[in-house]
Amino acid sequence: MQETKFKAALFDLDGVVFDTEPQYSIFWGMICRQYHPEHPGLEHEIKGSTLVQIYDRWFSGPLESERADVTRRLDAYEQSMHYDYISGFEALIADLHAHGVKTAVVTSSNIPKMESVYRYQPAFRTLFDAILTSEDFSRSKPDPDCYLRAAQRLGVDISECIVFEDSFNGLRSGRAAEMKVVGLATTNSAEAIAPYSDLQISDYQDVSFDTFSSLLS
Image (cartoon, rainbow, N blue to C red):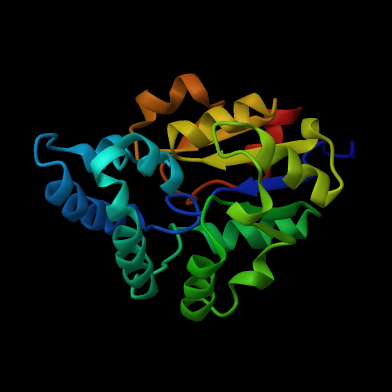
């Protein structure tokens, strides 16, 4: 049997590992209606942006002084969120590990957010060979820095990696890293993310190691 080229699966977190996007829409809908009532639906436009990017674009000038309060409210909200896996995720991880594929989380979330994840899902860390958070990167998505660092951490070549992403910034990051990209249609439609990904899926039901390995053949 020919050795597979698929050596590492690199997963974003929200909307890719966890079905959290609806919860974030509630939080940011509340914040956006308070601070930007003139811009209905802003919570949908900022999906996939880092907190720094949101602040730079929407909380500068007179609103810069509100950043600390928004951060405090977000931290409190994340502590009470549900972190439930996207359907089929745990089975896929087991299948990947059975085929010798290394796995990593590559997220713009920070360590305090991850502590909430670990409390909700105590076995979370056992699913991955590495977990990279915002503290590990010098540049945020869509820059490729985070995925290049993940490949280096796992000791694999970029040609052996597949990125799993849902947001446009994340998809662009995987592309910029010159890796194959699987798009999760959890935040945006399959049609919308198709130009930025090699394969589009709605969840991890009915997919396996073989499904993704074929992308690198």
